[in-house]
Length: 191
Length: 197
Image (tube, rainbow over all chains, first blue to last red):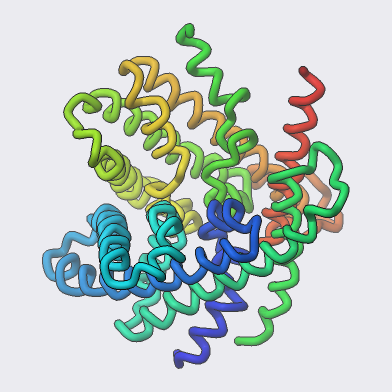
């Protein structure tokens, strides 16, 4: 599988939010405003690429040689949680402006199931190191794409009169359903 | 609060799926059929009950600063147990649920209950709370799976309900159908809540 295919599939065809249902909580939680959704999107791209890089080595040089693959879930979640902490500390020290922009989103990412999900899927698909990192960054970019589109629509939705029972979560789900329907049109892009 | 109210809380008043809207990823992903919803619900209930039990047991030994990491290790342990049990005894269901079994670790309901309930309460109420929340989650998932299976496939729990030549709406077992069904279910439960007041 070449890299272009991996990128297109991860961005459009198998969009992480709209087709694979990963990372729905932040998708609904931070898609209220366009600016916050951009910040969250960049933070996720950064952490996800790093997480796949780290989990690849753990899997290849620790779990497989010692035949303890059943420890995958527990070791990956710890790696991701630790990684998020390290990224937070390093950013704070090295680049305060970037920390200002991404800082508040970082703790939220530990519980973003898209990060753990993508790390596990990359191993299921037998990707090598570079493929795994490309896959993670384009999946995260797909997450950002969905998030930004959703935020754009929801900003407009503020001005619309919505029936009382449909306010909040229900209308967001129905919006996401329509977006997902639109994204199904990409299915023909790759065989 | 009486013991029964700890249990009933999760079933309706604070139903994790329909009222608090947590753990949305597995809810949307696995409910293509009623049996998948039931399987996912059962696995989550098991993890929820045991993680609540062990958090309540160990709450005095876990330092406050690293409690989240501690809770995650407890939860991940039970997820690994469920993962291995399902792989051995229900291989077909294990294949269908796929990646969403290890992802029970990051289901916000479980960490949420550990943080909001089990670490502040005694052992017995924590077990009841986990059981109630788990069953509330299971019921909502099974209901949603039944709707989607009926509309998309004409059956519930693999039993044909509609006649063979009835037209089914395939969309409902595809991703957009998940979002639409969930949206309308939350809207209906909001409506029922407002009528009961």
